[in-house]
Image (tube, rainbow, N blue to C red; front, side, top):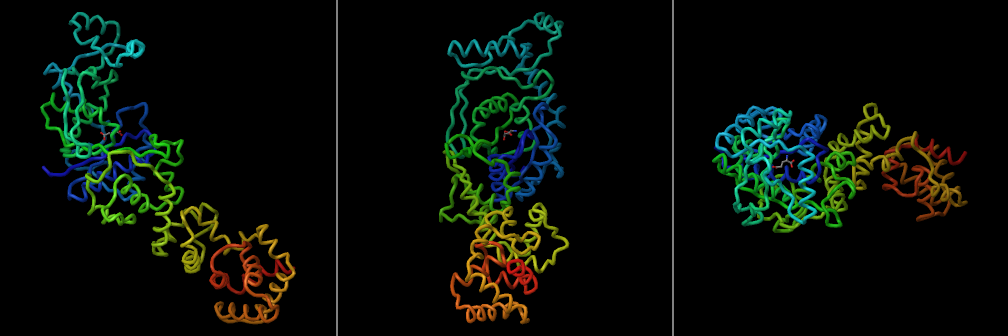
Length: 478
Ligand code: GLU
């Protein structure tokens, strides 16, 4: 068996949260660092909450992030199936093993009865837990309940014991068995409970290290009990801290965007998100913040993962994103921008591709996200050309009028390469009107772009060209 086999085991009950993506990333980096295997397992036994559409977006998001799996859906390996809903027979046979060892018993309590017990315990300030009502039923009592039409769940008999394990991030962990009631391993609808299925799957899939969020610490205690009951060797556990919002509570929707899909839609590059999540809550010794995938893999160690929660800072993600956009090859960036351009109403397939590339080359340093592209490139498209109120104000001045007239005059009577015409035109306007500095350039900018801010004017002119510029100037002068 391989020395390093890890897994990401999401439940498809919602969009992939950045917290879960970070868990996936830690496991993936760990596997890649050690040359081990990364397994994707879909935990879809909660039928009421699981949805196929979430499974689809989950695979889409992992693919988008570049987190590839060695075994899992669409990549069957030796330990499949990798979807829990397709492993029900396996859980059934394992239930029988525990029944044979007298480690489990059928429980006939209804939801209402359990809730009542819970409330009573809470009211009397005791720990809410199942107190074993059905544990010692006689065969007759069981029969009677079955006759009433009650379908049992199966509970694991918890023995009083202290559960101790070494956590790779947290060190020695001790959990008192006292606080844990007999827990359900098979629900009355026949589906396995999370703790039961996960132990069987992790064991059968040869998982060596379980890396997951600290919110699973209490589950780990139950899982270790099950490992012992089956006589399986437990894997090594590592529980990382969770991602928090600025108010130090668990990052959730009320903090803003939290799903990978939302960041994708906002125009965050997957490289930037991976870089950000990979470093969140851990740091590299030389405190570098922009790291390639390869650098993150080679430097990855769980030892650096911090025990305290990591605060999600969207500003920082945006800062990293701008760096990744800037460093992206323009041709590649154009392809990545196309869906956003289409969404903003541009027909990218009929555009002159070289011309589009020139535009992107010019504006890429101004982009923080891909979705912002429209605000930067609209100035180059006639159908989007429109004077802002600030631009109108600039153009209302007398001096502006003279500048624009001189500019038109020059362009009408001269041709040549856009670069040469532009500098010659500026020289001509200066001589003719005496305008210089802001007085000269602001009206030109306002007239040809419709805005008062934007990229370098000579470059804008080169991309627009003489004809298009003349057309725009004619709007102003007419
Ligand atoms: N399906 C569980 C979850 O999504 C997996 C937890 C684990 O890694 O064991 O929380």
